[in-house]
Length: 454
Length: 175
Image (cartoon, rainbow over all chains, first blue to last red):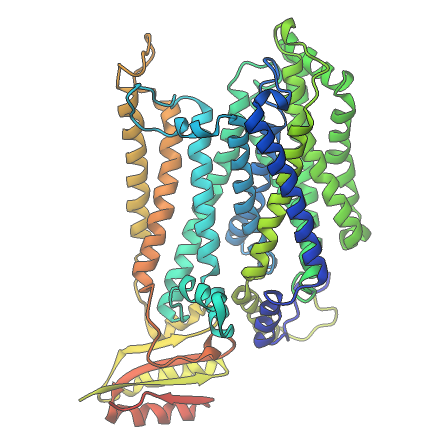
């Protein structure tokens, strides 16, 4: 395998390359931004229509109380886990290769959570009553039910979002100081000056920075696991057939990491091209990322099989009927597409020739996420269409265009936030890449010369 | 006697460390070793060998923040549940511990993270004003040593910096 990064790359060059990304991206950047804005327009139009007309236009009904909104909410929550994986877990494991790519993965975490949060509001319908979920004493003596996983969700996601934003910000402070020192005028200069807090890279600052970053990383790992376990509890703690399964929390966490890793591959390819990051987002790093994704895909497949097996060999006939319904009923094409995209397609990633083939990886990673989105939809829609009581058996329910429009637009919203972030803030961590280069050159200095390095 | 600042820039980290070691060993009159700062574009934990061990107290903030967050959550939730008027329990535990653990845990983390951040700002002295001498090269690829000493000490410090191949020495203007 080649080098993750060239050790002879000059530190000043690293600053120059990354700072250039804040100024002159390729034209493709503006095309992506324009498409994203158009997609957001579709979502805003659909939401305004739904808001003015009522929730009926979403085509949700009494048995199908959760539609695409909640499926997509889970999808976006799941997507957010990749940032934690790359920044926190791999940081604790001293995996150096994460350094050039963790910043955008962290940004992905933040923006995925912000997108997921919107779906709670959209799903509520009565937006003006969102404060009901907040714990506060009021004149009607109504408190949230603290034993409900839905209230846990509110706490967990708020904690995860605020902690992720802080983690992203703390990790960016040294880079913001670089931006402050190199950008000479305008609103950006003011923004970086304020946000860098007067960072000068003193030994005292670095010492405290190291401990702070490590501490927040240690908090984020159990937090990320708890967030998706709690989201899984929204389902697993109910009595719906197919949902009341002990393996749901680890299954959700694995699915989250899986979709997050696939999204990192997609964004890796985009950023590498748009911002000309070929020196930093290298093929050997992609190879490691692809192998990680493959491993997580296999864990997800295993947990999927466990879920099926526990239903199949269990004594809950309704849950078994539900599983058969998924595989043979009107949702069967989507169910099998989920299996194909989630478990069969990633087998390609095991072959070396595909592990660094960027166009193929780009397409495959998108399909992996289609599979992961279908997984979430297949948890929700067939379960509501074939519940315990025959009156719930509404097999022909199909989400309206309003629902599809909002889901479609959410991808634009995420892309818009993400691309604006990458244009305003450095999406490659300059100081960590310098550390990587420094440690590699030190290692080379102390290593006897051998043929076939790495 | 008035004190002035001196900033020496180095290309090589080893040279900067050697300069610090020599300054520590030289016991220069009119200069306190605690008035020396190393500025670098990346983190160098090795520098602690020559600068001496300095305490990091961020973890105490973390401990206090996490405990406060957890306790706050538990008492908020438990006091709400203990209010019979708002929630009729029908024979179930008034304060059920297993489900309350979840929110306690979440707020434990939230408190820990927020107060760690606060601790970081306090312990690092941030937000901070710009030092009297600063070079943008420090955020690029050079190592800076900022010292503060009496007029009489500056000459000796300059000699040491020059000996260790300082690329540039900046001196604060006299008052």
